[in-house]
Image (cartoon, rainbow, N blue to C red; front, side, top):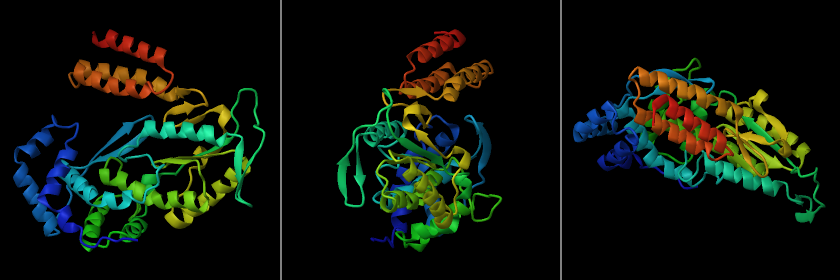
Length: 364
């Protein structure tokens, strides 16, 4: 295993900090705090560089707020200069770990994302329900007559997520995972500073929702789990998106056994546990809810709660618009994002009705 022992000078370089600034301001160029930081960019970056070089850097207090999507989440927004540091850190160490990540980890990675994960799921659904399976005793592929129930597809999905994932990540375990590859003590110092800045009820546990570093560390931490599923369990049809994962197979009993083995691994190795109310084995013919969609063999539906939520969102837009807190252009931009998302399912009539209601509220 290749290790990296002298990464910090590149991390702290002016060029890397400038690149980090450009990434941090993406889709936020009109924000006052971005404009203010950019107005004196060279001096701001040089001050950050001096603090990082001298290992005197301290993050500013975070802004805490709640969002409901639909459940309430506590978001920790970092000061913009700290977001620049987060990008600088990820610029330096992300390539080291990206080489190890499995193909079917889809969150917060270039070229991946929700739509790619759903397309992969549909491919796996077709493959897992085909009339062949591998007999591990003699390593030969044996074909069986396809089991069908009318036009229904055959097979099962182990659909699960991890309970309170971001609040449960253990800092020491995370640092041990990172240290296997990153041996530069100054990089590890910066990671400890960022992790320790987030105050949680349990000391040494948890990462804030909303930070770029949290998204990246989430993949690093659960890569241990990915490797276990792929190389120990040898599950072929496995997809993970943050703490939400699914395994497809024709054999329900095998999935039941894997569920128990997964629970033991998560608890023993990563001090995590499955969310038992959200961990189920589902017949594929019933459709599997994954990443906001209910996916069947030949079509997709938008999850009912997601379809209902858009009407409440339009009402919030209207209220903010009337108070002068949102322009029509901003409302259009947000709606376009939802329409793109919803178009990935069979939602033509719903999208048409939503656009009609939007025009009624805001005018054309």
